[in-house]
Image 1: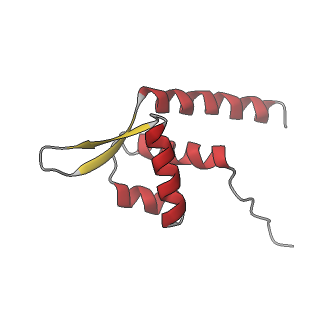
Image 2 (image 1 turned 90 degrees about the horizontal axis):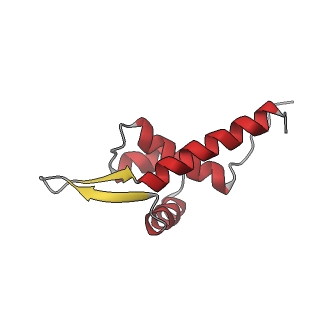
Length: 94
């Protein structure tokens, strides 16, 4: 039998979303972020709006008017805590 693929749950999607921004030197444009998250446009917009509203990310404009997405302190804290929880789960084989 082929390997079964597990659908990402909500927290994993949020983690991936934030990690992609962090891995891109905490500055990425919306379209590359959309591509890398592997979400539909609609799902991406829903997550994006929620993360913006909850102050995990922010949109900044450079001096040329280009928009970039960056993490806030709250977004960095989420990544750190989620990694710790994931490590705990793996350590205890849950």
